[in-house]
Length: 269
Length: 269
Image (cartoon, rainbow over all chains, first blue to last red; front, top):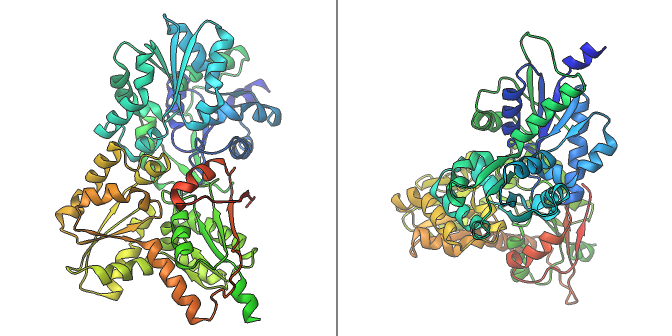
């Protein structure tokens, strides 16, 4: 029985392609696990849309993953993690891990001056999810937030290190630099693609926190604690699902995942 | 009977907010007409998505407008006009006017050297809809196309005249400038928002064609020919529908429409 549960897939979803950076972190951390990923490429992006619409989409995305009999769901989308994770937890009876709490904890661990910056989509920043998580863990921390709406289209366009990205990053991040942050949470799964550009804009001394990596570590801890780690040594099987035709997803996927994707299947929601 | 038909609304739809530039042109050209506009803000953008998904969305958008008993439908979205207008015409029994043919004809009228540039979303440019329309009207014309995926997020971010927009525009448009175009079709309803920036990038001698304005002129001609112009002198009534909460739509709407919107209503598709 437990053996059967251990072998089940981990479900991961995102509004589109950005969540593949989280899959990359999971594959590194947990090479024996089987993963089913869903990217809602027919309705991407979520970060500019309302709480109501994002919540509805998130429930549909989770329902799709549940139909693959997953042992847990990783919400590899900071927007959904920010505005809809409580709704999801009410409607879904497998454990759900989001991006906010792991990212916030990692930032508090490395920040010496307790001056932490957070960047993300409009929806994530408006929700104040990161400041709330940071302050509930440490009421003395100083948090500075900035929405960076153009970072997602820049990453999707493959312009993450273009000089235009440099100018935009400097403009978005100048207030955070003025506040002398020592740690910056990349509160959107697309942003690791712009990591070098962001690092240059804030300076080499600021530590960048990739919430996806922190979440992958938490997934491992959770599976260990609940004796749900896949023990099998055989071939793993990863399945990638999208709601729009997979062509662009396959093209960009390699850049986001850091390796080739294998099978990508279109599904109807 | 005819009087009743004349009083019916013109239906206009777009993936989001961009189509308001077309509504602006219609209001100027046809101040007595009643308009119902639908912006699919819960699924915007269309221009990065596949023909299949865009066609499905377009049929749902048209069905919504038909439920308001419209006398015609204006497809104020170049992506839908490029890839899905024939599918729409098969399924809808009111006249449909898209952006491509009017924009192409206007460009051919003003271009002296018959060297015409076309810019639009990835979907619009990949479809070759504008080159086909231009060449079927004049086989001797030279057409140069360029997708400009970052223009839509720049317009939505309100950065249409930011120096970043200048740099991006110069980079996107440099090949068209090298080809010595004398006319440039703005093949996306968002692009009139970046008109000044685009004009500077291609030079003052290049004539910019706003397909929305050309389409509005065609709508007037069509209504006249078919005796469908609204003859009433009373108050007109415009209704704006969106699929996501209207707040951002209202905020940005003024910029796109050039005047205040009045009532904006959220609908479920």
